[in-house]
Image (tube, rainbow, N blue to C red; front, top):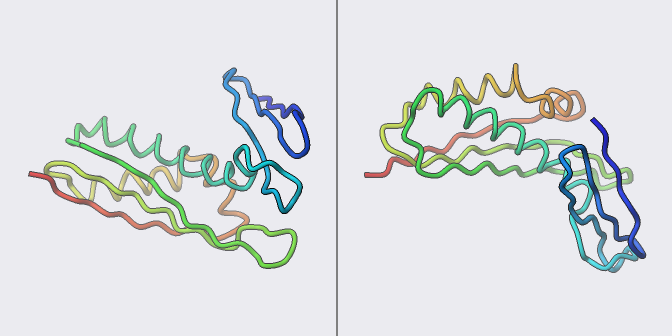
Length: 139
């Protein structure tokens, strides 16, 4: 896998990777940026929850659960001192659907955490990652 960032101006870059898509990276004005793109640390979190979300949804689809909506959020704490590394994160899986079996969801999350999500396996070596599951039954 390869990735590249290309400088545009000040602290503005375009990021690309093997998939061919691009996304803007930027910084806040107080740090010399134009507030015109994702912060690199935000992308780490998006990679983490994107990875686990795809795993969990793939597993839930195979279980044929009637999922109506699925969101994954993360709240991460950072060190106050530089480098401002992540020190703890909580991932929340928010599922709405009909007849959702909580044990099936828990199993899908566990499989993602322990077997499939390479981003989580890499990051858990640097800081603790917890999870919460919220299930809302819809009539």
